[in-house]
Image 1 (cartoon, one colour):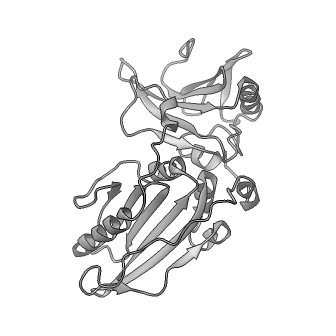
Image 2 (tube, rainbow, N blue to C red):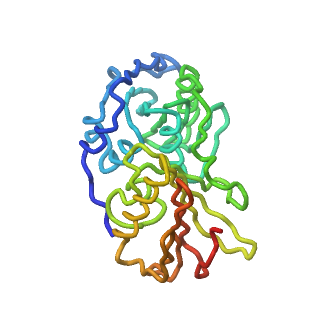
Length: 292
């Protein structure tokens, strides 16, 4: 059931070589009294990301990572760092943000979309995903973190609206559960369907997932993956069926669908619908024509 690393080369195939991120205008010394920059800004490309994120680089690379800029600040006997992840586009930045902030907890004093506490603030702005890290966790440093987040967010353009989540039905969708997926590492946060890039997203295609609530009160998760055309969708469906995790028991199958049960006795269904692959998982009841 494990997903094995596919390596940096896999992601490099889809890396937008023409993207040249500019140096961000980080807050300077004395943005707050007594706080100054602790060394120069460090920059890391995709190959260098493994030196910064221990065990988490693959998710960023899969989603469309371009460059990381890190600026550290010292003051009040503590250190705070700003980590600005430049992503391929606004959807990629939103994808990382949603995966890292499953339950948003907004703070006062920050105008952009964000979530945080005294240890860490996550901020989304344009094609940037930003972490403000308070290594000491001291509560009295939260205002300093807030100023850093607001100042950096103010110099980043808002960017274009993200439409990739619109592929999900709005009816009965549980708020704050939608996620963007772009390969095996992001899919793993939702459900284990099998090893490798089983949906053939390839770090290029954005699939979406969300939890839905039925009238009975039961919930389930829907995954929708759009492809260039029906032929590609059928190839992804065939790959899913052929490499389905051995812990998933197929109960019924046809040309365009199959139903299955997992080891926790929840049910699922995968179905081709035009150029889309629609998958329901964590169903309490065995599916029949649920997707019709």
